[in-house]
Structure formats: structure tokens, C-alpha cells
Amino acid sequence: MAQQPDIDSKAEAEFGKPELTLATSRDGPDPRLLALVRVLARRAARGLYEQQQKDHPASRS
Image 1 (cartoon, helix red, strand yellow):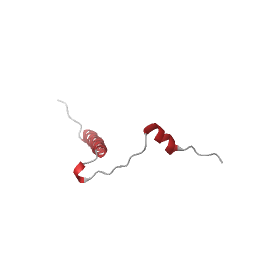
Image 2 (cartoon, one colour):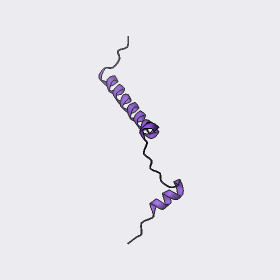
Image 3 (cartoon, one colour):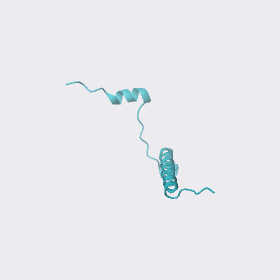
Image 4 (tube, helix red, strand yellow):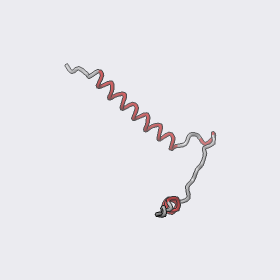
């Protein structure tokens, strides 16, 4: 059976030791979470806008 590569060691060598930190209430929200929320909100807004354009095309005079 073929031996699997050691992915954890490779990732650790490339990126450094993995870090898991939990934000406390005084630290405020996690910036990664805020960035994710912004991306998801933009995507939802874009989808809603495109759907509205499809449902109610603007009449040109």
C-alpha cells in the first residue's frame, strides 16, 4: 500500500505552525469573519439586483 504524504508537516513547513485563537468579547469580531460576511452580503445583493432587473426591466423612453 502506498504511503500517504505527511500533509501536516508540509503545511507547517510552508506556513508555520498552525494557530487557532478564539477571540474574546473585548477583542471585537474576528476580521476574517467580517470579511466573509462582506463577501456574502455583496453576493446576495448582486443576486437580488440581477433578479430584480430580470423581473422588472427598465423601460426606456
